[in-house]
Length: 244
Image (tube, rainbow, N blue to C red):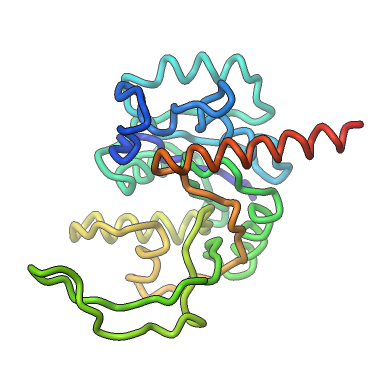
């Protein structure tokens, strides 16, 4: 049984445009001089249960990315496939390029979540072994309102019980056979989901939740970059202390 990680990284990241260089997509913005995507890859390349990583990229970003990968000398093989217009297209392209058996485990992880920890990765892998599909998630801490959007703005319809809500994170993990079947089904009828778990849910499958971490930040806005710099500084200090 193999564990293969898919990183869809072909998004434009328009909400990051205020952060500076508009010629860069958000996954190539830098934290302490290193692209966010490389920080993310390090977490999976250093995980002892991961066998292979596949990154879905825009064609014009591939050459530069491969040079960075060569410099990193990752412990695990990293391959690139061409990304699509939507996340779902990018993951589908990666799945089509895999040499995988039905029982192999596929992890799909956001390119801009560089602070995922080994415990979360392991937790999702172990849950997939047991249940077939699992995601990382954290409990909702704010009150959640269901709203109706009108021409005058949003109007509250109901308060959703917070204890039944989780905020989905990545990695999201699945047996290859299960995920491939779900992708084939949505391709046939043109459904576009918000994440991989939504495709499994749509087909009647059960998705289990593994406790994630509030630090598993998805960097989507300029403000997130500032918080990410702080998280990275803390991480570097911990690593330095552990080596002393």
